Length: 188
Image (cartoon, rainbow, N blue to C red):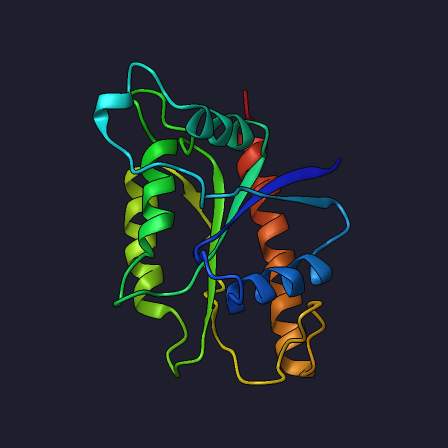
């Protein structure tokens, strides 16, 4: 069986180190995971005024999540929290009330930063939001990547054996988490 993984890059930057991290994760992932990026840059700002008539960009996001078996969040930390664009996407996907796209969805969180603590505080903020959205989060291993120059090439090649081994293990654990959640709570 192949699992369809939708993934969010929390940064809108064209030079995002989290996009670079995503390439590494995809390279190191088990072969039975297939990845599709869920774009967030084209979404208008969420407002309940749209709940009765979603714009096409938000409808497309919800459809892409529905086509996914699991979600991977790869995000920086902005001001010790979630980047605004990512929070906006989560708001669109979790609304209108009763149509939460993340309900029972297997999910994992990882992020890279040039700072020493990686994205630890931002991930805690994101995890709180995902808990409210009833996503089935992988809680270990936690992954706060301190991305130093040359650690990961633009194509996703990891140049440090211990980092490559850690990221490989993270993706293997994610695959196991997805299989376990879907065994108990199959996607409709």
